[in-house]
Length: 496
Image (cartoon, rainbow, N blue to C red; front, side, top):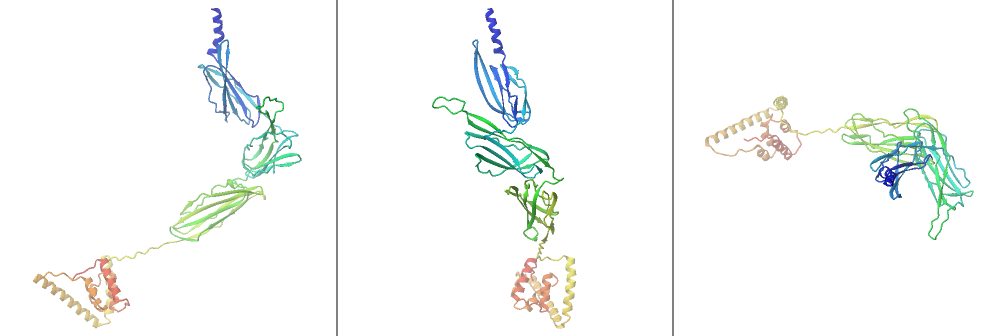
C-alpha cells in the first residue's frame, strides 16, 4: 500500500503537470537567422500562435515529437521551432503553453546582436565599395560588391544573402561575368543606391556562405552522401554622409523640359492636345504628377508614361504626359515650371516650357425661319412698305389708274359671284389662290393676282414690290415656286 502511494506521488506530477522550456542562442550577427525552440512535455499540449516579436515577423519552422517511458509511464515531448531575422537586440518573451488543461510559462530570454567583422582569409574575400563617400538625398551612388575565392577551392555551393539597404532605394544593375584574376575566381555585382534621408547612413557588412565538403566526416557504404559544412564570409561595412536637398526640392540631376500642341486654334467643342516631356539624368522617379491649371477650361488628364534606363552608370529617363483641353472661349496654357538641384553647380535650377495662346472660334448658327410678324410690327412694316410703294406708284399715273380699275373690277366680280351663289344656291367649290398662281403665264399676270394681298406678309410684299418695278431677273417658274412655298408655310391659302 505504501509502495503504491509512493509510485503515485512520483508519477502524478507527470500526469497532471507538464514541463516547458525555451532554447535560444545568446547572441547573433546582424542579419543572421535566429532559431529558437519551445519544448513541451505532457499529454494534451497547445502552443500559442506566435506571429511577431518586437515587431519582427516570426516564421514557424515545424514541429517534432518524441515519446519516453519512465517507470512504465508514457511521456510525450513536443518541440516547436521558430525562425526570426532581427537587426538589433531582441527579447523573446515568456509564452503560455497549455498542458493537460494547465497553463505553463516559458522563461523570457534576451539575445544580443554581435558586431560583424570582415572575414580575413587567404581563400575567400568579400568587399563592398561605393563611388562616393558623400551624397545628397536622392542622388545616385554606385555600389559594388566583389567576391573572390581561390581557383582550386572545392565549393559545393554558395549562398548569397541579398543585401537589405535600409534607408536606400536600390536599382540592381546588370551583373558582370566571372573572371579569373591572380589565381582567384572573381564575381562582381553592381547596384545604384538612392539615399532617402539625410545624415550618416550605414551599410552593414554583407554575408556569403561558402558550402564546402567536410573532410573530417567519415562515410561508409556505397550509398553514403558527402557531408558538407558552411563557412560564413563577411564583408566590410560602409558609412555615407548624406546631405539634405534645399527646401521644397525633390529632384537632383540634370534635366530639360519641353511642350508641344497640335494646333493653335480650335472650334467650340473641339479639344487641343498638349504634350509635356521631361528627360535627363537623375532621380526622375521622385517627380510628382504634373497638373495643369487653366481657368474656364476642361482638362482631361491622361496617365503619364515613364521610361528609365542607366547610361554610363547614371540613372535617368523620360517622363511624358498628354493632356486634352476643351474650352468655350480663348485661353492660355501657362508655362510648366520644373525646379531641381544641379549637383555639378550645387545650385537650384528652374526650367520651364513656353506658354501657348489658343484661339477658340465660335460657331454662329443662323436660323432661316419665316415668321408672321406681330400686329404692331406688321403695322410698322406696313407703313414703311406703303410709303415705298406710294412713292413708286406716283411716278406713273397710268399704273395707278390700272391698279385702281383692276381692284374695282376684281371686287365687283367677287361681290357678284357671292350674290349669284347665294341667290341661286349653286354650290360651287372656290378656286384656291395657289391654282391661280400656277396658271399665270407672265410676270404681269402673276402681279395682278397677288397685288391685292399686299401688306399681309413681309416676304410676299418684297416679291410684289420687285414685280411692280420689274426689278427681278429670276425666272417666272422660280418666283411662282417661292410664292407657293410661302403660302404653304405661312398658311396664306386664300379662296375667292
